[in-house]
Amino acid sequence: MSRLRFSLKDLLYEKIKLREQLARRLGPDRSARAVSDYHARKPPVHCGATVHSVLGCTFRCAYCYLPDMGVSYERAQPYGLSSEEIVLALLENRYFLPGLLGTYVAVGSLGEPLHPVGVKRTTEYIDAIAGTLHNPLQLSTKAIIEEEVARRLARVRGAPVNVLVTIVTLRAHKVLEPAAPDPWRRLESIRVLRRAGILPTLFLRPIIPGLEDEIPELLRLAKEHGAVSVVFGSLRVTPAIVGRLRRAGLEVGSILSRVRGRLRRGVQVSLVMEDLKEYAVREARRIGLIPLLSACCANTLNSFLSRGYRIPCAGVDYAGELFCTRCPVNCREVRGEVDLEEVKWAVKNYLGVDVEDVVDTGVELLLVVGDPRRAINRLRGRRHYKRMLEVAFRRKVVVSERKPSTQFADKVHLGSGH
Image (cartoon, rainbow, N blue to C red; front, side, top):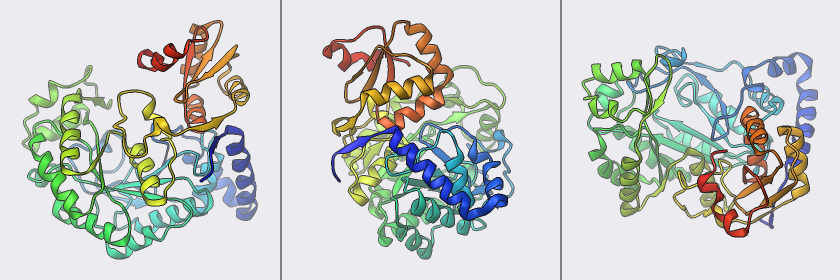
């Protein structure tokens, strides 16, 4: 790949062109159906755009957040849009950017994407998004992956596909995941994926306090079955989730002691788990798995290992010290061209902020403004557009009161919360 050029205008041009072509092909009725869909207007999550190929899940995991969101815990069904309609819905979304340098796409989120009722819909969506838009794709699953499904995912053209297999416990799966395939069958799914030519990722999210002694054995088994990397993530709880964990026989004292803030009905609260993550990362390195602390990092790593695309993470997790584990992509050292005049245009048009100057540190775009407080409030109020700009330029967008020195520019992100 030639030297990277990060340009919002290039991505927007491609988006408009693809949208017009697809709308003409679908016709007015199907286009209207896509444009009115939830995917055409929902804002991104940290790791990009979520696509719901299946709604609901029947695995009934005690730590699952779906019931708190009003999503069925008893049944699953394929999403209603066709594959072409879901592509047009994404192109209609104001925050979505197409292409290899655009928004990451995660298939799943509100259901099990490889649930038997939805495997066909999920693979159709992946084929269409990869073939038309070329955005890096990802899915996470607890389902059994048959060889034919693995081969089909390996045959996807147009974009790399990252498959994460979720396993969080070996000994407590019967009470915590009563209807899900057991972890040994999921380990076999990792083997099936690797045999088909996919580089699987173990998804050890959530790490459940009280079960951390299982981590070394789980990592060892995943490595033996063909996993190349592992994503660790925190447990998020609500009063309902805590209740289900307690009824499952888990000792919840260690969980409640880590709650960050106050538990409220329907609100997911993250636990303080930095110590457990640090332990897990050390164990992964010892065993030979590449440790990651963000799902979008797994997508980035997969693009590099499977296709040779060394592109900074769309999550821009490398801009701070919280998530980046310095994986082989080494995002901080990947240099790409950014037109600072285009940055000023984008900040003005999408964030409503006039800037006196922009300083590119290679990791951040520091906006030099006369009224920092007002600019910061604008960025907070338009955080989804800010996120879009960060994806397009692969830099963290932060506010600076004055043009910083090089030394300050290298350090400002550590104290910046903007």
